[in-house]
Image 1 (cartoon, each protein chain N blue to C red):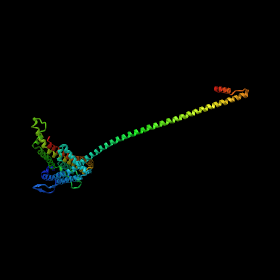
Image 2: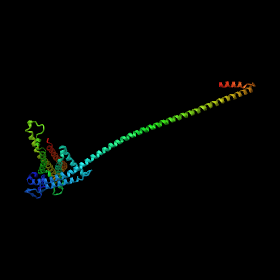
Image 3: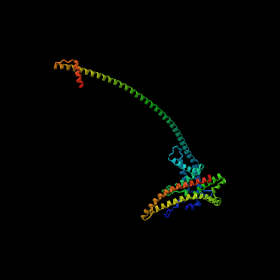
Image 4: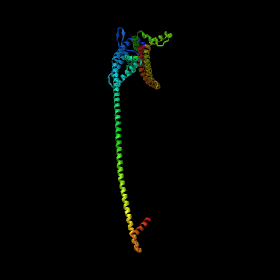
Length: 164
Length: 261
């Protein structure tokens, strides 16, 4: 095992070079380069923490803005709803009133038309009676030669017609 | 790797060979292949860290990797020591990265270039011992600096019954003093054993292919090769785990020194 058999010849050289090399490593790498690397890492960590805090702050602000915006929106919506329901109610009332008026007009017209019709029917009926009575009187005169007064004829016609 | 007899020596990879002679104050401090790999580790670590210093707000892949490792070590120390652990991040990070890079550097396939072979710095007791002493020394210095002689209360845990006061401090002292050895030996043994196992399996593959009988490659080399793929992956895992264990134990020991029990 050369590590042990050579130890007496080589220990001085090993110690000497190791101390030089390790000293260089400690004073250049450990004391100079390492702190720079760590400073970079610390600066980055600080920057990330700062940025996160700023982002959190911005988020809280945005949340606040969003909340008030939502409230505004809700208020505007209720106002709009109230307005629209009022308009709807008014429109329904107007329509009802107009409809009622039109209904009354139409029913009045219908009633007038009915009355006229009844009058016309009555008139026509009475016309028919007179004509029928004259015709009956004529027919009696021609057939039997008997003279029938128009009043008698009318009575007879009326009796027949009511029997129908 | 192959010796002169054609045998494959699994220990040859740990041999230290001088590349340039150097003598300071009577000590032989030659630049060796071990020193070369330490320098390679240093270069790789510099490159790695340099790629992570672009300081972008949105990190790229490389910067992400570097920040991942630093964050990992940072977490380890803050979770085991507490907020005071931040002070020891440079030391633990240096230990962790040096061990990790050295372990990985020893796994690099430099062997495909004839005449070269990777050298695992952390498979040497001399190296792991120095690292363990650095870790243990830090604990001692921090402990006595912060608590003075009160640091010895570490050896008397809370709730020790008075009739055990002669035994518990002894056991605690022993377990405390054994720490540098366990730190050094664990890393050294793990890296050595893994590399020996890999080299032995590689020897099976090569010797099986060179065998006269035609059935040997089929029966020996192919299964060994398949096994080697798994062992190599396992070794890579061990490389990372050993570096992690060393760093974690160091931070736990530092916790002892900073907060006592």
